[in-house]
Image (cartoon, rainbow over all chains, first blue to last red; front, top):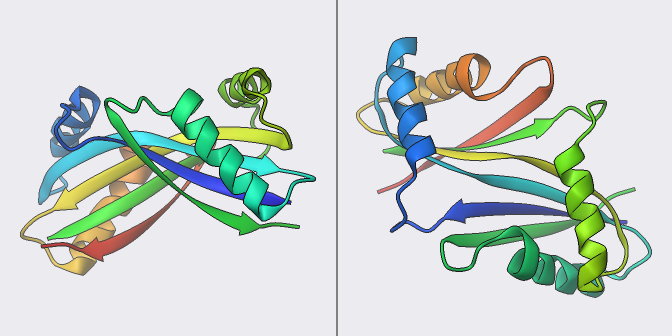
Length: 83
Length: 83
């Protein structure tokens, strides 16, 4: 089995109102030094019965067609073998 | 400056309807071998003018009090130096 761990982030040029809201809320916690907050998605996909190469291709296709919006978002992922 | 990269995931015992929906949708792409999908949050926090230790403490506090729901979610983060 393989597990793909995917990080989907907004492109740097895209405004992130959710992140701005978190950065603002941080002030009420008394946490100092926060310059910016960017929110994204974290996805873990477990594959069974496929090779590492197939899992990598499948993850890439899922990201491109389903999980990420290629106009606004970037994605990167790592693939690890699991028991 | 330091950047904290935070991964917030649902605890394994918590049902993930969004992940189930993605796993179902994957079938329409013709992608095979997907056994499960779990959705989580990815957060990047940039700190300025604080030490590595302060940034680490602040990130932990933000996760505990603001970003993650400790009943349903786990979090982990890495801290890296950025220019």
